[in-house]
Image 1 (cartoon, rainbow, N blue to C red):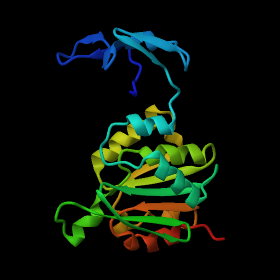
Image 2 (image 1 turned 30 degrees about the horizontal axis):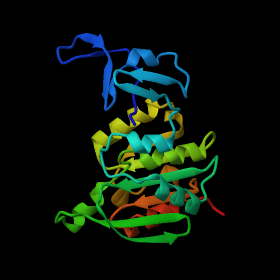
Image 3 (image 1 turned 45 degrees about the horizontal axis):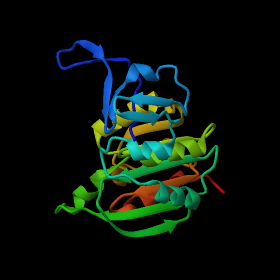
Image 4 (image 1 turned 180 degrees about the vertical axis):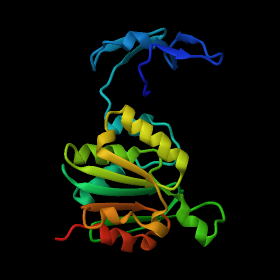
Length: 221
């Protein structure tokens, strides 16, 4: 399965425009042949065939470019259920690039997940891996809160912020999400969000450092 941006022509290494031919296990696909196709249509490759599928968060999770480790659909469904997210919800997401799961705890409408890194990192360095990551969870959250909700997602890494922002825009969901570069453990989520948020998801190594900031963002019950 592949996520393909339908561009009939692309530039090669010589900066020349050439026909966009996407290589798959079942042969070459001329991307031009996808133009005008309806979702569910069958398209032919040089050694087989494939179907054009409507993009969904689940399919994006399976095909996205991995900039970090990601959260997959079974865990995403539990996160959304536990946070009681619905259309119109305002949500904060802060993920992480870590490898080993240790524990999960709940504080009001905050879900926190703690990890430990394989490398020997200092205590001060650990929190600096917080981030939106590859956007797997973000897409699912956005689908839940549309059309009147909003997702605020934070990443410490400048390049990931730039790339994921471009992806949100190209996927047509940019108006439902705000991406910001920030160390939430140290700087919080910004005073402009205080009292405006329904749910917070923290996927960071020291979640307790961000919990006071998260608590300040909740709407008054």
